[in-house]
Length: 218
View 1 (cartoon, helix red, strand yellow):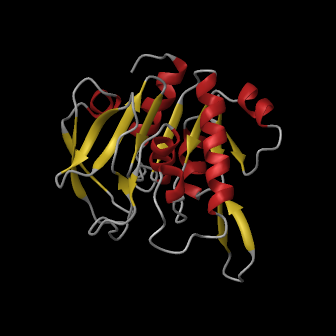
View 2 (cartoon, rainbow, N blue to C red):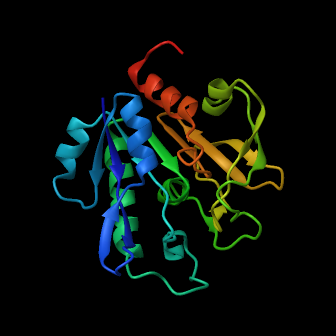
């Protein structure tokens, strides 16, 4: 299996620009015998969609541009925001057009929601916690998350300052934190979560996603 995954922009310790994916993704999908295909530009995107079985849209410290959901930014926009939005939206569209599975994580859930017509809270308090801290989330029954974990609630990490405000049409909210923040949505071939299961080394989550693609028993 081959999964496309969005690369993210950042600066090295020396201040040089780089595009990257976190090591956690490499380690997790290596164990699952899945090849990751990192994508950082729109070059030959049609061919990428043809050879990949699904798409993962990962997190980033760079926010989605509020202009994409009809609001003015409350803070200065990062110089790479437009580039990242364009890549995320184009990849989501291409993979969705051919009904291939899409997984969104953190910024990924936000980009997916905005692409399909939803909006975001530009800043929310109390959700950017240290990586090892957890808070409670509740799952809806008859959802990817409930079927994966076989429970109605669990502890998750929280590393974001934005979240879904208006849910895009056609999407079902399948997870919420105790304070009402949307933590998970799904629609047909798409599942997206606000937390970072890769930082929790959550093999169950990623294995369940891969098995859904492979149509294996779980």
